[in-house]
Structure formats: C-alpha cells, structure tokens
Image (cartoon, rainbow, N blue to C red; front, side):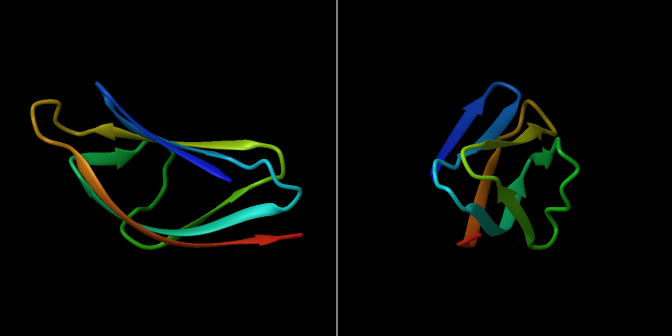
Length: 82
C-alpha cells in the first residue's frame, strides 16, 4: 500500500494505491480544519475505506473558506483481508 497526500489550491486529496493481492482496509478518524469531504464522507466519526487489490482510491477534501488556513489531523488502523 502506498499513500499520497497532496494539498492544492482548492483543498487536499489522499490517494491510496494497493499493489497487493488482498483487499486493503483502513479505519480513519479525521479532524478537519476548513476542509470538507467532496465524497460525502461523514468525517464527524470514524469511517472505513476499502481498496481492492491492484486498484487505487482517491479521497478529496475541499476548502470551505479559501482565505482561511486548512489542515487535518488523522489517526488510523489498517489491515488486509482476502
């Protein structure tokens, strides 16, 4: 699993790339400052993502106020399953 984090003018993005033969699962807790999910994720509580074998997953977060500072705090646990 490779994880990329990218900040850009309108927000930030997380990209997960799973090169394994198993499903990658991650439970995530996020604290967002001036960011909101573009994917409809409820970031007020922990949520889980799954990335299928040899695939990728993109999560995008847009800025709420372009004149304010944006940041996030993340904690997670992960595992692979068949």
